[in-house]
Length: 107
Image (cartoon, rainbow, N blue to C red; front, side, top):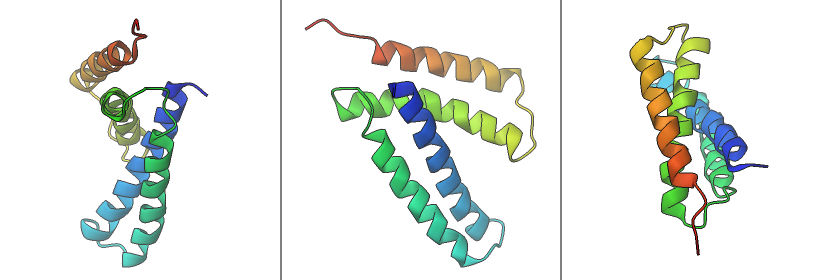
């Protein structure tokens, strides 16, 4: 699997895990929402280690662009709030930065 695919799967789990806490603490749902949230966040951490990046810091930095994209998709698909042009411009810039960070290096 490519780094992008690992990052996309990790982003889904991170957003779902964080949303579970949001649902509990901000939306008044049952504290039982925390359990699947914790499992999702553990899965996120595991999947992030599958990146092909040689260093953790670079993997985390590149992941940021994918996370922002997944967050905008979540905003639209789950929260039913369409992204505006600034959301879309921002995510394109972030994805470009993630691509630059993951670019192959000599040596």
